[in-house]
Each structure stands twice: as structure tokens, then as C-alpha cells.
Amino acid sequence: MKHSIPQHYPDPYGNGQAVVARIHLNLSEQGMAKAAPDAFDTGYQNPLWRAAKRRIFYTNRSDYERAKAILSDLNALPEGYTA
Image (tube, rainbow, N blue to C red):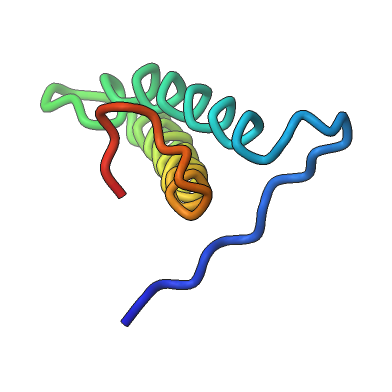
């Protein structure tokens, strides 16, 4: 069963869907990297802080997967990424 391709990102400046998706891919990677230490630390974290960081991480993860699926559909997935 093939998964459906997510809706493409808005492109008001006409840069092309591949460029916009690569930007989202990079930004979501950075967001996950910043949120992960507090979201998944094994030491004590304030539960509200940990929950907020996990929500940030999973929101970025969802956007990362969306961008990856769009780039895969366009055959523009950067080197080193797999669909």
C-alpha cells in the first residue's frame, strides 16, 4: 500500500516546491535537535517543561516527515536521506 503524498507547502514567492520543502526539512531538523535534550533526558525535568519540549519535538518531526515525503515524490530528496 502506497502512502498518499501530503499536501504541498504554500509557495507565495514561486521558489518551487522542492526549495520550500528543503527549507522545511532543514528547519524541522534544527527544531528537533534543540528540543530533544530536554524532551528525552533521563534525569529529572519539570513535567510541564518536558511535555512542552516533546510537543515541540513531535511537531517538528511531523513537518520533517511531510517535507521528506514531498521531496521523495519530486525525486529531489537530498543525498543521505531515505524515504
